[in-house]
Length: 248
Image 1 (cartoon, helix red, strand yellow):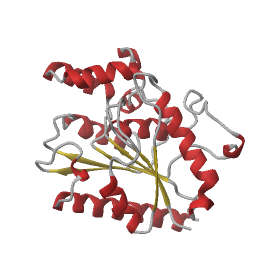
Image 2 (cartoon, helix red, strand yellow):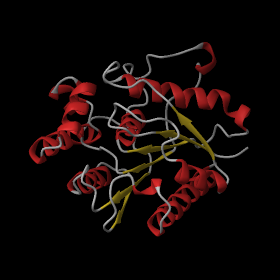
Image 3 (cartoon, one colour):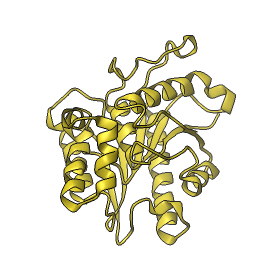
Image 4 (tube, helix red, strand yellow):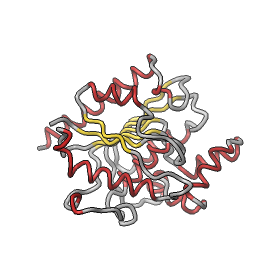
């Protein structure tokens, strides 16, 4: 069986589909990985934590049904894009949170929501800081979409991966690769840099790979930067799988 990765798409919590990162995901699949890409409930009809609930259920479902895809239940990884990176990291850092594991079915019983490793492109790792940034820089669409999902600032802070670290909450910290363009107008560079530092201080492994002059969502188009990002992701996954195999 092949190693499996669950993909959580972006779209500012309000839009997007599972086919949104096809070039990158197809490239990963071609290296011998099973990429399972999901659709999930969106704001404004479904506010926080609906998307984390769906992601938690999806990884448990994937583990239960892996054999149907010729995939392994061992070392299931996560891949997230933009707001999907936010959702992925909440699910990964709080895999046993009863608010997130509320969805269930007989077939997923006995499987947990943990991830062996995570990869995120231009992720919203601090939902409240990004909200403040969008307000101060006049990104009205981002402000509205964030309001649609979280409903209030308390939820933005509680449902923030950075907040989990800042509050010293008990959390799972799978090895994490962050892919970030430095010309991303949606994500100020301070957010991934602060998160990677905080994650390491808390005992986790975090790699931040910065791509000069690249915008938000740059891997949706073929380019040298996309090729480099793909190779970084492949190498990261291979290293995680080798580490897991050596530990068995």
